[in-house]
Structure formats: C-alpha cells, structure tokens
Length: 118
Image (cartoon, rainbow, N blue to C red; front, side, top):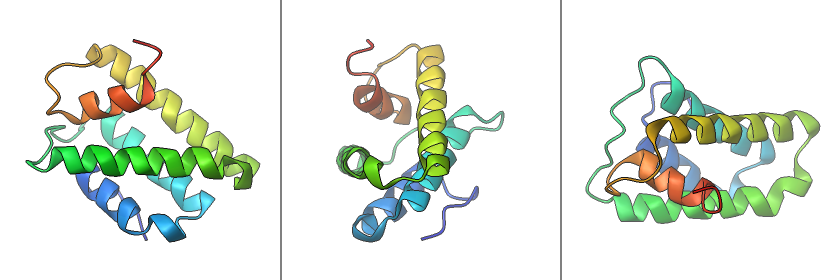
C-alpha cells in the first residue's frame, strides 16, 4: 500500500487494515507518520469520523496491536520513525484535551495511545 498526504485519516486506517497481514515495518512506520502529520498539520483535515467510526476504532486497535507485536522486526530507522510519530500524536492529543464525545479521531486515538496517561 501507499500512504500519501491526500488520504484522510479514516482512509489511512482502511488502507492499513486491509493490508495488515502484509504490512512490513517500513509501511507500519509510514502509516503512523502519515497519521501524525495529518493530526498535527496546520491544515489538518476535519477530524470528524464517518458514521462507521466504531469499526475504524477496531481497525486502528488492530493496527496498534500489529505494530506492538512486530516491533522486534523493525530496523532502527523504522523504530525511531514509529516512536517519534506516536510521541507526536500523544502531544497533539494532550493539546486537544483528551477524550470528548467519542465521535472524533482524537477520541479514538486517545483511548488507544493514552490509556494510562489520562
């Protein structure tokens, strides 16, 4: 799969999830990098989730589990990119103030990445 800047966060999640079985460390790192850029960019897209946001939350959870389970396979570059991207996401989420209504991409990411931080 190719993750690019024209994809929305829900599209990035769908692409990664559909290709989860073949998602190599470099692509996993690219996924988290694109999500963090989408969340933190000046022209960040509307973070509202589509009506099937529960399914996207499940998919994102599976991507996170895949990332955790495959970290030992990451090169130093992929590992550092993934860690940096997740740290950037946590920083953005803290600035958004954590969880709110549950229908926002920030809420889904907060529930997954900041479980013990809230």
